[in-house]
Amino acid sequence: MVANVGSARELAMLPNGDLLVGTGGRTIDIVPNADAPGLAGTPRTFITLSEGPATSITVAPDGTLYAGTNSTIWKIAYATGDRSESTATVFQRVRTGPVSPGTDGDVHTSTSVVATAGTLYAGVGSSCNRCVETDSTRATVLRMSTSGGAMPRVTNLTTRTRNPIALAINPATGSLWIGGAGQDSLPQGHPYEYFDSPTVHGSTDVDYGWPQCEENQVAYDALGTSPAPDCSKTVAPAIEFPAYATLIGAAFYPATQTGTYAFPAAYRGGVFVTAHGSWHCCPSTPPRLFYVAMSGDRPATAVDWSDPTVQSREIIGGYGVTSSSSGYIGRPTGVAIGPNGSLFVADDATGNIIRLRHR
Image (cartoon, rainbow, N blue to C red; front, side, top):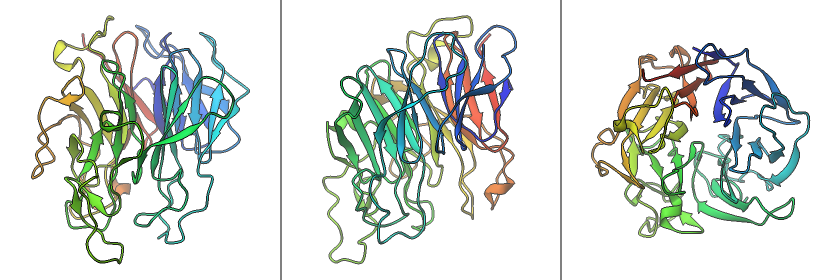
């Protein structure tokens, strides 16, 4: 463990080796010298925002920071070496409309953000487990330009994406990858949870089908209508994980990674994905850190629609197997890669942030 930050969520690594930590409250913390050879510095508050949950923070290639809270995406100026900021400006609003009139109370409140050159992506969760949204910004991944005016034009990169928390850019291709959680209360072991690249499929309104269609264009829910929904135009994701894994964080390990602690070639170009674990039983889906080998934007192992475990392997486990999420000894969340090659994993149950290094 290199630091402890209460309710630690998404991580973002700064080029100088300091680590930014989103939280379940209104603060974003910073861990100084997280990827330095010795001990990391003591965590401190980097910025306090006017609303929460401040779960997500990202660093754009030009050095600007963006943070996501329930209804707002914030822009934060940053200069190398800064360890505290007092000002954040509103970059964009999300969840601008009401919750669905058909909500069952499962209202998601976090907004995940990730940036690439000139573009910011935001994952905005749904206002229910199973419903039709009336707010076009919910259950989507939004795309917006980071150049130009303070309020950029926003387009829906994806639609019908229940809760896209894990967002990552593949540095080898520039494509966006997202982790999607399927709906609850469906047949045991289904639907599988997915990790997929919407930018590979198109440039707007890439349809993941929730709540009517899941997995390999399978109709699960007619929402009280007849006949069964047509799923033929929905996306069949490239990577699948077990049902209720709840994918929270993802980071690609650069194929060109250098540094004292760079991982071996077998890990280069692949992606690390955290699974928060299920609150469901029985059985539960336990928390884990997974690794998926990749070749560009293709998984090294093709998806198997009868087995969601063949594409990934467990890197960290042992968090417990329980019929209640309160029984886990930890629940991994954010993941990030340091400039010297270290891998960082956060945990919102304990607040611990661990650092893995190859020596």
